[in-house]
Length: 362
Ligand SMILES: Cc1cc2nc3c(=O)[nH]c(=O)nc-3n(C[C@H](O)[C@H](O)[C@H](O)COP(=O)(O)O)c2cc1C
Image 1 (cartoon, rainbow, N blue to C red):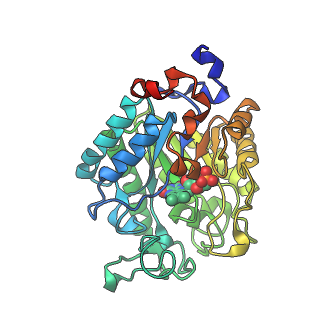
Image 2: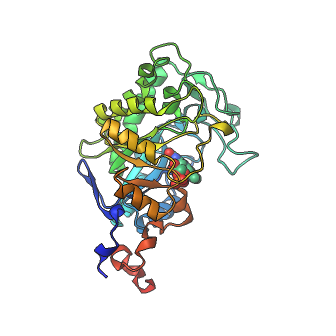
Image 3: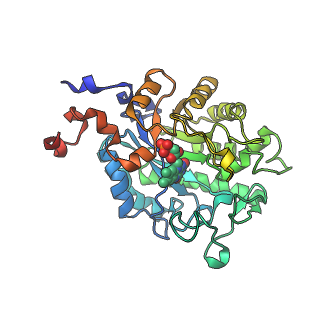
């Protein structure tokens, strides 16, 4: 059989600006909490991400990287705020690119979800770490905590200016590091999502209240990152379609935000939902392709390319979403933790898809 007989819609390339992504099955960013305290990638990252690149995903999105030391979630987060870190990332980007995949990186400011333990340490998941115990000062739009994490300080206008600068600097570092794509994390209850959602943002100044005001900081960041990252390379935003909670963001608000992102020059929306509040009632429903319809709504309204994430754990579902034109790519998370060769599973008889070094196993 020729290799084209195996090529489903997920195997066609996608070009964004000057970057061609070889297929549409992509690895979603997933924090490994394996960095040194200097925020640099370790051998773990090289092997972990390297294996998924060998495994045939078209784009490897490296987990959330803090844009500054005070913007980390834990002391084991990756960082990309200085040149030493950027140099250390080069090993990752060059190995991923050698395998034919596109190296991408997600940029994060944690806000009120900052300064906690790594998930498997201590008692209970993600317990807070106080400044006295080696944690750091956290700020958010308002002094409203996430669950039992530390109560954030209300951000000043100087804090907001620093956030914008920090994202822009990290975008420059990401380029130096060899990344072809950067993604701004504006979802999952981190700082930019906190500003967007009335459930975390109770400000009465120009950064709170109306949607126009709540979008102000995320849009400033999007503009600054777009300007700081080379024009030939795409910028993605991970956006929340809904908070799944009374009084939170709805798909209509997400549509307005998406349209604004289009005017700023963002190239693709990575569409997710939920986890702004620690409330069992606000959990996204456990159903396959939970964010696919939202992604399609955002695509139609904004004209941007979209890639949904969430419970797309089998290749036939991924193929259907793409064949139906609901999305331009799909992001896969946990299925790729379970199996680095997930993307190659339906191509067992297609040697062209597998590294030559593995052909004797096919
Ligand atoms: C271990 C782990 C770490 C994660 N870290 C991040 C992260 O760094 N940034 C992010 O945006 N989402 C993160 N997520 C969420 C995933 O990217 C993805 O959105 C989520 O797992 C749903 O997709 P799935 O059903 O394919 O796993 C993480 C998920 C897991 C399981």
